[in-house]
Image (cartoon, rainbow over all chains, first blue to last red; front, side, top):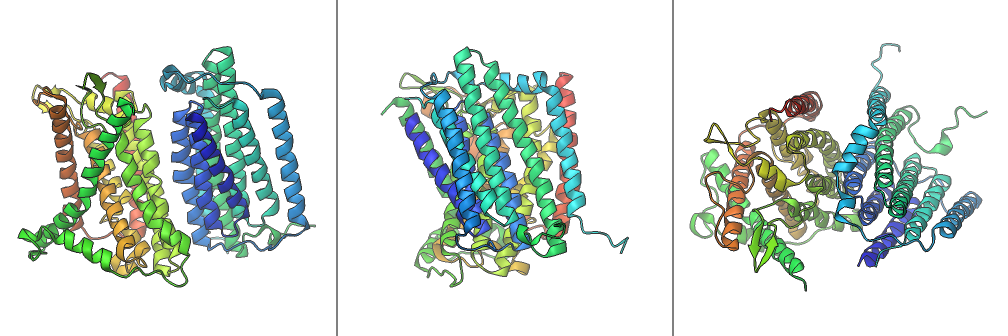
Length: 167
Length: 109
Length: 346
């Protein structure tokens, strides 16, 4: 059962992520990235992190990608300027494949054959996670909050139309 | 049957590779940005998989929690990054009427 | 098949059966209600009081020609109406409609999926609803549709923040994401006779939630994505026949599940004080579902009432309300609730 779910969503993630990088229409890219992110959320559930899965869907697909869509439609971004298959893309494909293979051999060599024990009810409890987040890692948590504030300010300043004070 | 941890790692490696392909081959800033998000997500997947594997072997949950907290931080930072990045795109588009990175060569020597 | 699976299927079936009735009933309520408010008669030809009007509408929808614009993006144009139903048909799984009951010698919780991440899961699934709107607006290749889609995406993310913060304030004193716990927390009375519902101590959060819910479901006064007087019909301008009907159903079912959520978070959910939930399991389940549906109906009627009473907002007013009024209110509410929770008042 678990294996079947994994295989289904792994295939879905791979196919949709390929569509993300290969499709010329950015709207399609965002839509298929939604599928990829939801598949990764399923992986989180399988790995015993349902909270992360919910946050993943809520933050990534529910907010970040909607923002992308908004910007794409606002700017009316059309397809890519480079068409067809050229040397540049061939090189990119080689580099990407090489990197993926390198990672794959590293991971496979070191971690192959390690089985995970089935999940217990206590493994997915939320209270320990909350304690870790707001107690053990309180300082990083606050710093991330500060970072978000800085990002909001920066985004507002950047995207704001200049008020014609200088020109 | 449970899924071995190496399979998750393999999936993450493949997704990371696809993300690299996107960043290197596309010339549209939005698609490149999407590929970066994809790479971030594949890294998140490895973090969760590693955390679970370590926690499982050590028989203690704190490793799993550490991994989950780290992923939460990554998601939050990714959100901040997306907000600033998209604001930059809008600012660039306003000046140049395009967000094709091949045409953003004003600062090139 | 295991007993758990059968029980889950039965519960899902019950929800589906109820949710699918929402659209025809609400169409009738909306049309007759608007007629009453505007001192008209409304549909009164098909059946007594026009009750079968929805049936006639359904037949009309099925018989109409299904038009896809020539320049439309065919794939997305077809996919969008299907996606409109996804949040509506998935979010109900975490809403409880009764206490744990003992049926056929087993303990059965009266909720489809009693996940510990409960509300979070619901919000996550509900946040996927915007994609159908955006897809529809983009794929139609029509400027009005596109404007509707842009408005929808901006409106949804803006109001989701306030909505989520209001929900978080409810969860704080409860200490759990699970909606069953939220309902349990609200059992009991203040002063012996006022039900201990969250709507009373958290009326600011309640207000924020209801206003944001209007925006999330694209109902007037916040129906900017489809504003008839400016955008023809917004994102579903280019849709006809059953595809349009699916958007229609998605909107009403989304309203229904959001009403159920509002009833659960703020009005005590399936629980009604002075009602003893005892007896055979099916009676307990029927009571719980009845109370929940009754409370949700109040919200649905409120939705209709507001729609025919208020004028539409302008888009900049909408954004200003969301970011400069609702969001600060929600944050203040959250801080106040957190302080009261730590102080042991709530």
